[in-house]
Length: 68
Image (cartoon, rainbow, N blue to C red; front, top):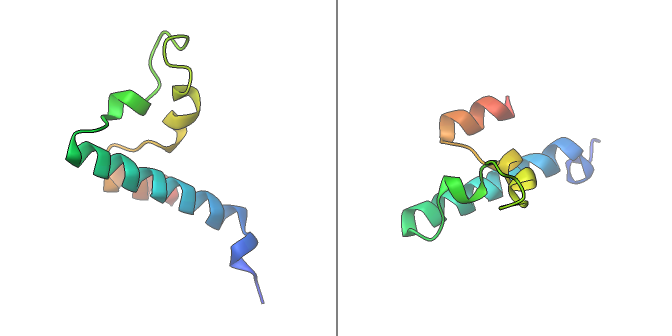
């Protein structure tokens, strides 16, 4: 039997969906915007965006398309 718990694909999917949920909730409540976590120049100003931009999505369609 395949152990999905140790699957890198499943683990990455969980991280991406969790990040999207946090981004969505933060956007609805006004605590975070897509611009806060998306890659923007100069990178020296917001260096964390190099990593967080990998997990940001504009919407459910964008998220679904990337997961497929």
